[in-house]
Image 1 (tube, helix red, strand yellow):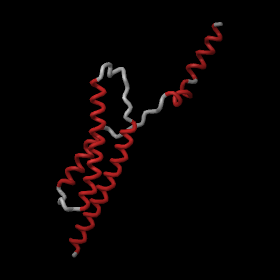
Image 2: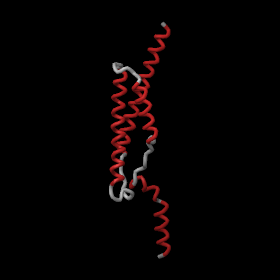
Image 3: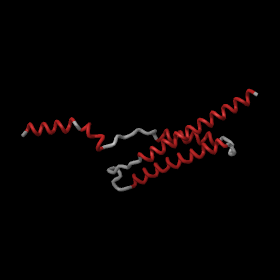
Image 4: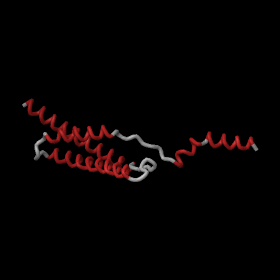
Length: 129
């Protein structure tokens, strides 16, 4: 009887790693909040210096507004979750929101990079003439 209990214990402890992906999804790493805040702030600061009639500013600002909205939504959901009773015992799933935020940040960074490169090439052409 003791040997069968030990065999069961051996199976249980040694095979937990095999069953973990079935029962618990793996946590994905996201950009830290300070990175998101810094990216949004830096691009916003640079965009504010561009003229309002610049068509590139409109494209960058559109992507920036989407990122800010998604980031504010995540922060609000976290705040509301922390205000609930037994918040420490509950978990909140924001994986979809973080995924959408990362996609929006990638679009924002791409648009900003393309706008800066465009401005650099225009500036270079003006200096060579």
